[in-house]
Image (tube, rainbow, N blue to C red):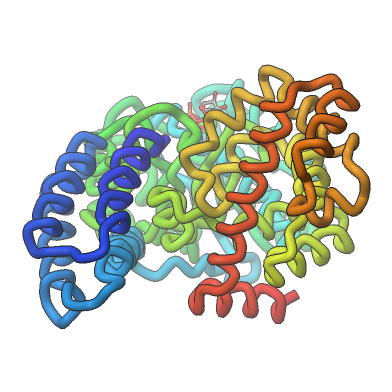
Length: 444
Ligand SMILES: Nc1nc2c(ncn2[C@@H]2O[C@H](COP(=O)(O)OP(=O)(O)OP(=O)(O)O)[C@@H](O)[C@H]2O)c(=O)[nH]1
Ligand SMILES: [Mg+2]
C-alpha cells in the first residue's frame, strides 16, 4: 500500500545520506520533498504540516548539522517522527473480564466479519478460548459467513434466528460463552453504508448491554480521507478503544491509514493484510515506519519466519543474522521458506534495505527466477556457499554452466547476496536494533 510513498521518501532521504555535509538549505529542500510525498500519499494536511515542522526543528537545532553523520541523523529523526506519528494512544489489546468482551464495529464491507475471524485466531494463539458471535440480524448470509470462517478455524460461533435484536444476540452470546467455558467473546456487528442514527443507536445499545473491554473500529484503509471522518463519527457515539485497519495489502495511497491515528487519537491495534484468516498483524509503529522508509524490519521478519519455520531453523537464522554470518545457504533456505510463507514480496519488503526490491523480488518469483537462484546455489560447493569471496571468474563460469544459467546471472546473484549481507551486518550492529533483537531472543 505504501509503495510509492516509500519510493519517494527513500529517494529523498537517500540524497541526504549520500553527501558528506548537510546544510540547512539541504534539510529544507528535503523537507519540501517529504511534505509533497506525504501530501501526495493522501496524508492529512495538518498532520503533514506538524510532521515537517517537527523534523525541521530537530534537524536544524542542536549541533546535528555540524556533525559528519548529519545526513544519517536527519534520516533517523524522520524515522523517529514517523514512528511517533503512528504511535497515537495506548495500543495494549486488553482481554480482561470473564469472559472478556470484544465488539467489532464499522461501516459495511470494512472487514468486520473477516477481522473477527482473524482476531479469534490471534486470540487462540495467545492461549485463550474465544467464541464468535454473529450479531447481524439483518442478513442471514452474514451469520453463515462467520459460521464458515469459525468452522475452518475450529472456533465455535454463536448465532440466533433472523430477526433477533442485536442486543439480544450479543447477550445470548455471552451467556453461551459462560455456559461453555469460553473466556473471550468477539461480537461481530452489522454495518451500514453510512453513519446514521439507527446504526449508532444499535452500537450504543450493544455497548451498554455488554460492557466490552475492547471496542474495535474496523476501517477500510482504501477509503482515503473519508476514513478519518468515519472514525470520528464512531468515536463520537461509543468509546472506541482501537482501530483495525484492513486492506493494507491494497494499492491505495495509504496516507489516510497513516494519519487516522494522529487525527483521532485512537490507537491502531491491528492491520489486516489480506483476505485469509492469518493476514492479521499486531500493529507496531516503529516497524511500519521502518518499512516505509525502506529500513526493513528484521524483527518482523524473524517473527514471521518463526511461525513458518521450524524452531531450530528459526533460531539458526536469528543467530546467523545477529552474527552477521548470513550465508548463501541461509539465503537459499530462507527463500524456500519464504515461498512457503506466502507472498514473497511481503516478506522481502521486511528485509533490511530490500523495501525497494520487494516488487522486483515478487516479479522474479513470478518469472521463475527463484528456480534459477536455487540452481546456481546448488551448483556451488559447500565452501563456495559459505565463502562467496573465493568465487573467481573460473568458478563462476563453472557454476553458470553447471546450473544452466549464464555468467551474468551468477554475477548478479553474488552481488545481490553481498549487498544483503552488508546490510544485515550494519543492521545487527546498530544499537537500537541490537536491543530489539536481544529482547526478542530473551523473550523466546
Ligand atoms: N485484501 C483484503 N481484503 C479484505 C481484508 N479484510 C477484509 N477483506 C475483504 O473485504 C470484503 C468485506 O469483508 P467483510 O469481513 O465481509 O466485511 P464486513 O465489515 O463484515 O461487511 P458487512 O458485514 O457487510 O458490513 C471481503 O471480500 C473480505 O474478504 C484485508 O485485510 N485485505
Ligand atoms: Mg460482516
